[in-house]
Image 1 (cartoon, rainbow, N blue to C red):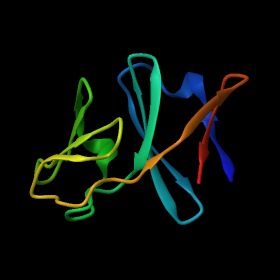
Image 2: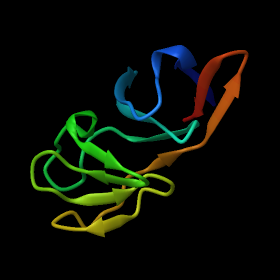
Image 3: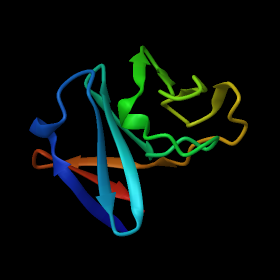
Length: 100
């Protein structure tokens, strides 16, 4: 099921933004002009990943510094051991949609 997340102009290059879709918190990232969407909370202790940092394809959690690959959600460094769920993204007419 495709869900409309936001207008792409609300997600500038290098930004980490959190969105609520129903019960889900989604992290949207604009990196290199490509949009990535992942679960918005760290799998280790539930930190809000929108408050983390991004260097290239590496997202760092703001609390305990776990690192994740934004392209597939995989864990690059613990203490997290469970990957983030990635969501398929579709851009249409200037809007960002994700497949829930």
